[in-house]
Image (cartoon, rainbow, N blue to C red; front, side, top):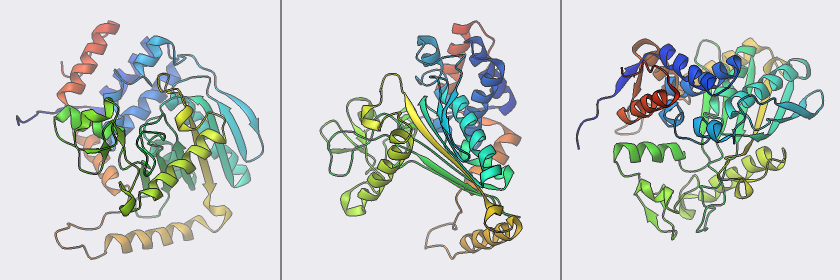
Length: 358
């Protein structure tokens, strides 16, 4: 297989271009900046499956804005609320914009009530879950974010997809150490990882996919021809019922609690979706410094664990992503040639200059 040369793009240049694309499609300036922040943050953290690779082709971004499925000038509104909770109607806006507002509202409520919980209905694809959970860190809070999605995952012992990848994220502040950041799909992996495998011409690992007949396959193309992802755990003998159960929990909190709908009744064309955000103020339980010190000790204990034979070392959740961010801020974000081409085509379509790859 021929070696692929990735282009390294400056993150600010990429962010400005993405912002300008959204603005060209009628998204207000502040919202365009927010939506660009979410996508480029994924690329900075090394989560390339959810970054600007999605901009030109995913229905949650440019195609949705062009078709009108996504409102460029959406006005999210609070439907109901208490001192610590709220239900937000996203007005069919960009998921990244709606979700940033929802998590910010959860944080503001937590400042007063110690905990803030916001569910969201009538929204769209929100990108990486950890972007929103991490917003709580600067406020000395634990952040939790989740989203459901249209069906791409089979339930354990099922033949056809009834669940979304339904990811969740938890971000926890530390002291001298980096924060703990968990970001995971409740399926064996995110659908974006299948896109990357297809883009690079590589098979997907065994245990990720079944084809349209429910038979195991390593062909990433199967997902787009009636196949499905498997729940976390992959197979019943490897406890896939746990991933299946977690996906249902996310569906309850994001879809049933908000009224957005559970995965199997969500609109797979419009990519409608529901979200759940929680902010928890640490100092409502104990002094933040004491908590952060104990988090440091736990993180250090995990990182110092003796590695298994053949393993480099034990990593703590978020460590690799924050390491990737440091590298990419300094050296640029690597973009696959197919992604660069998609951005250049998009720029041509919109009558814009594309500084990426030119």
